[in-house]
Length: 123
Figure 1 (cartoon, rainbow, N blue to C red):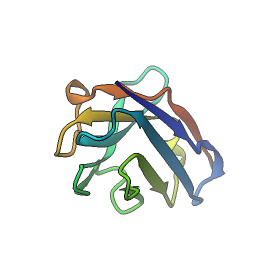
Figure 2 (cartoon, one colour):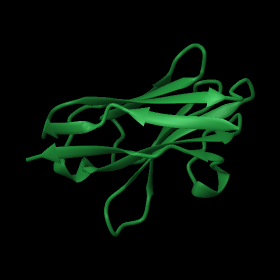
Figure 3 (cartoon, rainbow, N blue to C red):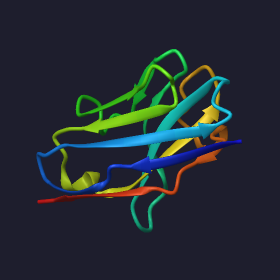
Figure 4 (cartoon, helix red, strand yellow):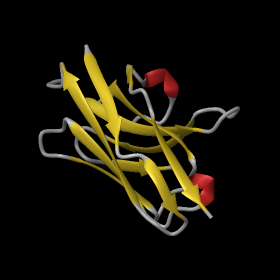
């Protein structure tokens, strides 16, 4: 079993930056891909970015060039650096992990979800 917990959300003005963290604990010795999704009220949860066990990254078009996903050497913490934030980035951001050597971009391959952290970008 793996527990995933996000931190780092908050309120920021448009054009600003935030860094989200996602800590995985428990049985983390096996390959885990770590992925960020986001969801606004009344909308479907959407893929944001993913990083594979080996460090390969993949981004949604809406955030490419502005967001960067990374993970620490121990591969137990993933980060989402969000720059040039716009009001449309306002959402609850969820960290998720799945047993995979590759990136994960879809819900069906996610095994563990965090509780979510609110990001609000004011105009």
